[in-house]
Image 1 (cartoon, helix red, strand yellow):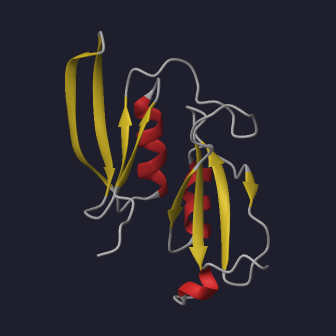
Image 2 (cartoon, one colour):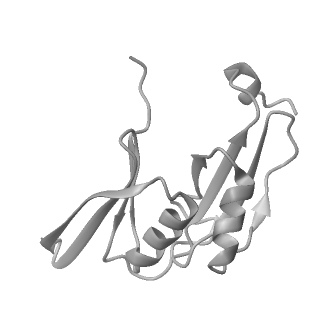
Length: 142
């Protein structure tokens, strides 16, 4: 078996906002688990696993402030990329709750992606592929 990313864990100040964003964009995803810790390094913490049976995004409460801007030079996550069936469907659902595309990826014949920023300043890239051929999906010469 090849290794793959099962999940990413992100701590934010307002987890319910990121959860609402993700579940609106991806209605087939669910809160597949959640729990609370009374003492997470001196403070309570509520965690949620948002995703499907294969992978998920772990969203934890207790973050202080906003996630650093993706355009800055701070260390940390710049964005999370999620493959979707239809970028247009994602845009439509997120537009209805007040989110606009922050920016688009460059032109490519076998993929396109749109970037959004949620209320915790987390940048999410939604990628739509136009082929199942991995070599074409992963072409960086364009």
